[in-house]
Image 1 (cartoon, rainbow, N blue to C red):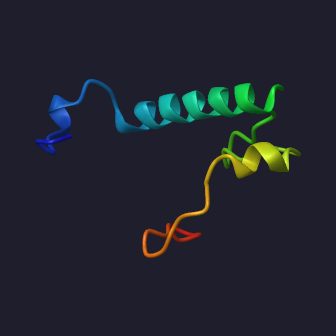
Image 2 (spheres, rainbow, N blue to C red):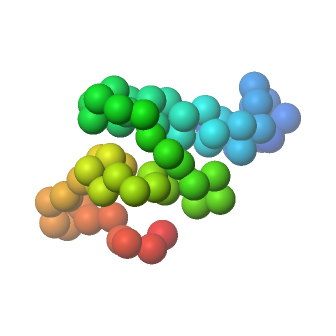
Length: 69
């Protein structure tokens, strides 16, 4: 990533994104103490507002992340 050369990556970027998402889902599942149902197309947690809320947090201005990136 530092060199910005795709040939130096250990894996495809998409694979890394899946791995990071699965790690976050496991952490959220552990924190809420139950299994999660996840929409594979959007990555949103289905029917569990408490778990979905843990994907983000309230940020202090001016370090706010926009709703749509």
